[in-house]
Amino acid sequence: MDHTANSVAKEVAQALSYARDTNGVPTVVTPLLYPGGGRVVLRMEQTPDGYIVSDFGSGRREAELMGGGHIYNQIARRAAERFAVRYDSHMIFDLEVPREALVAAAIAVGNASKSAVDATAEGLSEKRANDQRLVLWDILKGAFPNEPIHRGEKFTGHTDAWEFDAVVRLNDRPVLFELVTPYPAAVNSAIAKFLDVRDLGSEKTVRVAVPTVPEKTPHLSLLGRTARIISLDSPQEAFKLAA
Image (cartoon, one colour):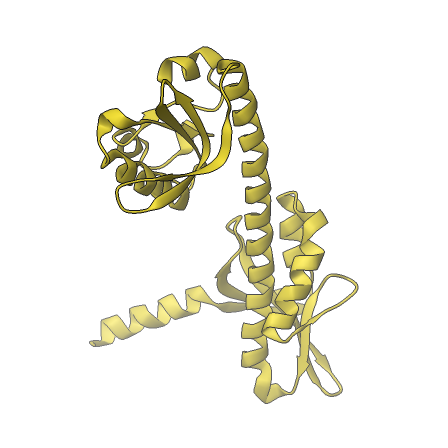
């Protein structure tokens, strides 16, 4: 590595994590990111026995900003146990250690705070998805009033059995509906299901992907090659026509 590359590496390292003074309190800005994009910032305070490293409640504030304050507390307690740090009555992650253990403490507290907020975001996402499934089922009941709506039913494709959000059988032909949230993992999961089912023979099933937010859904055109696309806010008639 030449001298220039060494200099660049040092600049990158300094940008990834750095210290700053916040209202007279020393803090460390870490490279860890909360789901909202903000950095995990740690506060350092000297005590008679060493130092206290804390997130100073930044995890709680991030959770509240995304509307997850009501589920954060329980999740945070589990994260504290996992990373062997404290989680106090003020909803702050912290750990008191001697000087030589500061780096390890900072890693543990930072990861605990980030992990708790990540899990809160996942919990909120799952709740939203469950609410959206209820909407989908109501739409399908209106679109197909004389047909049973099989919720969360497994359907066997060419190689595997897959669970779909709803299955309606019209003239012995299964119509498979899958809700798709605007995240790469959700899109990839739906594509895998639809491809495996399509391998049974395109004419044997009708496959319908139901994106919740089409304009923000990645790889929508690729998804459209494996299934018909009907957005969740489409009228009932669109679901009838898709089947």
